[in-house]
Image 1 (tube, helix red, strand yellow):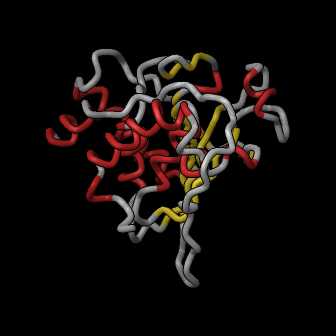
Image 2 (tube, one colour; image 1 turned 135 degrees about the vertical axis):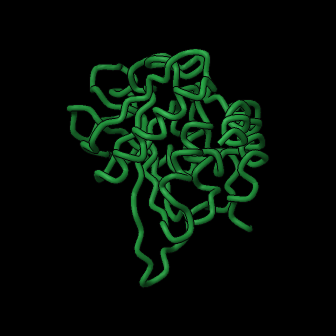
Image 3 (tube, one colour; image 1 turned 90 degrees about the vertical axis):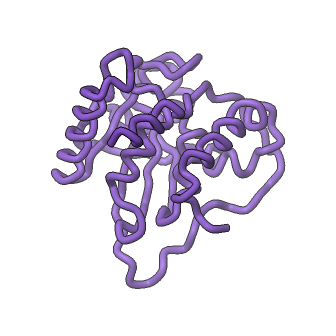
Length: 215
């Protein structure tokens, strides 16, 4: 457990989303789900979904990561509506994974290590309710694990402030506009991706090198 919390201090802090840029196209970080594989779903909010998507896409056992909005009261919101901060929605990543290859516990580890869970409605320069730290659990097992992990992390003193991550039952999810999907991989020459996301992905890959896809 001590090694886990020491690694935590290498966590990648999420920053603000930039502007849309078509940029250079690269290989899509999405795998076809093999026949007969039983998948599960995790839904996390940890700031800008461009960064969140880029992290989880690289994990072995993760087949699909979709950027979207959820938790609010407006159906099928647009990015502009969510940014107006009146929809109640959070920027989310919906993660479809093979629990035989990567566990929900491991996904929670990545979640808490790749953002600051001690700030209300804020990640770095991103400020607003759409950037709040939240775990939306899909079943009671996920609920118990998230609560247990949060309590242990708080008790460890790894952060000098209390963890404010919300742990709530899954309510809804609306995929974001197409240009938000696979954003980092498709726009690596865009300034924000090069200077903000790329260094975070590099740090992430060093911390989680044993959990990455082999290609």
